[in-house]
Length: 178
Image (cartoon, rainbow, N blue to C red; front, side, top):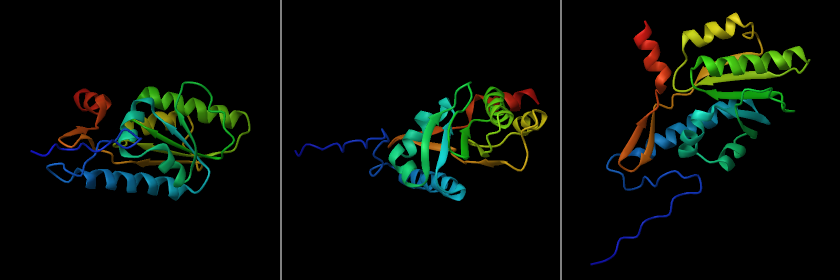
């Protein structure tokens, strides 16, 4: 019998999906296309600030070099501290979580209070939540320089036979609180 050869995983850590029972490669390709469209829609020299809980998930979709090819000049993990970058186009990829909204609001206010003019895009994964929008509005950061959107990263292939539903605990918490 002939020994089967396993294909080597890409540098990003994303699984090989060619031999999956269903076409999971199409899921990844759609997620990449949507993600790159978001970045390219902003322009060039985009500072990409990623929610720490989404780093591994995005790594399964595309790698840093691909993000850079599509306009992400600098890629950072969102932290609870001022976002000190030269770029004027800031793209947040975040879960719809109030703690994340506090961090983002504080970063926007810090830049505004210190005279740093920037444009912000806040993309929620996988969905926007009214509670987050209300919080940003109450904090006074929703203005002409802030655009809100959604990155529908619902299903992510972890292996050829395993997918992850990326709804996040916040979504289920919000459903049970209403």
